[in-house]
Length: 147
Image (cartoon, helix red, strand yellow):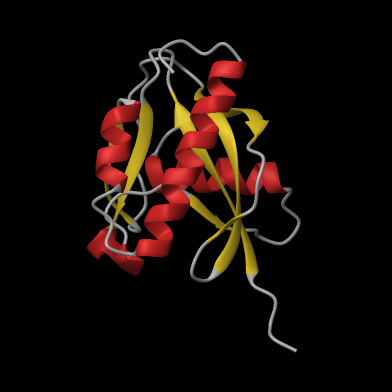
């Protein structure tokens, strides 16, 4: 029987003007140019706690969860679940991010699509574009401006 893929949790963070926060993994780890923060659970964490921790560690952003994005978004090494998140303090400077991230960038949804499309990892690129589209649909349903 094949091993079950690990589960990771992450977030698509938006701000009050409808921008999306993307991260550039250090050395484009895993073939990703721009992607969303995510990671595996620490013992005793809920999925929400994991997602919020990973978002803060990998982007420096403090966010709050709005809703779970429907769907199971598989990557190369894990099944991924994402939450739509809102920047907790509008306009607050981002804290330092960890070594896994080279840089972060607030971008429009159109810019997010273009940046994600530069990822050479085809499966990861396809997944991240699907995650973005689901997040934008959910954001519009919640009445978020700019989406």
